[in-house]
Length: 77
Image 1 (cartoon, rainbow, N blue to C red):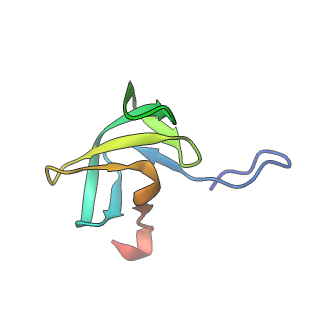
Image 2: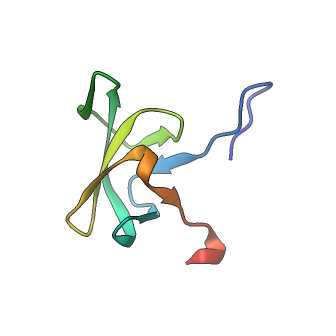
């Protein structure tokens, strides 16, 4: 988690990171930052704060909106 002054804490998602999705544990293959008007397509990035609108491609063949995945801590692996 990052804390910047008085800003709310947020986490980062990265390509290659293991996450929990509705399909179980998986890794992020690609991330696209999107906006509310078009949540499915955006710009490729390597990392994104969890408070942004984004979509991810997963290594299990699925994709997911950023607000539907969660980090897996080191204790969870």
